[in-house]
Length: 125
Figure 1 (cartoon, rainbow, N blue to C red):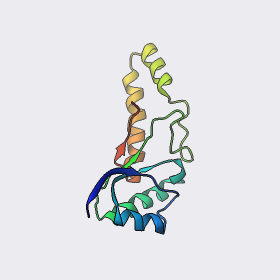
Figure 2 (figure 1 turned 120 degrees about the horizontal axis):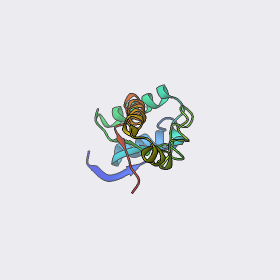
Figure 3 (figure 1 turned 30 degrees about the horizontal axis):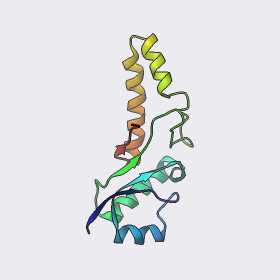
Figure 4 (figure 1 turned 120 degrees about the vertical axis):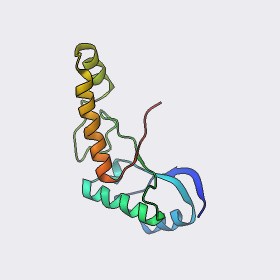
């Protein structure tokens, strides 16, 4: 199956039949998840597994834009509202051990994404 240089999202908490048929015939480079695709950790893990099974690729690109603050796709699971860019900027200005707090935040986010089977976190430009 030829891969196309495009990334698609999906409608809900699991792949529907139309998406499965479409993705099988037009293999996108990756699938990006949004808040509408996330209810709980096990559901996301099952969703990413089903996407990888569809493409028969254990490393298939599954993306998310998970930053903290207003950009929190896991809002139903964990509250990251206060952890926006301003929060980390203020800590950096006022706290010389900033990197310890920031590192803890990053490790928590990475652990959640990895557990759920998400292998790419996008960044703002």
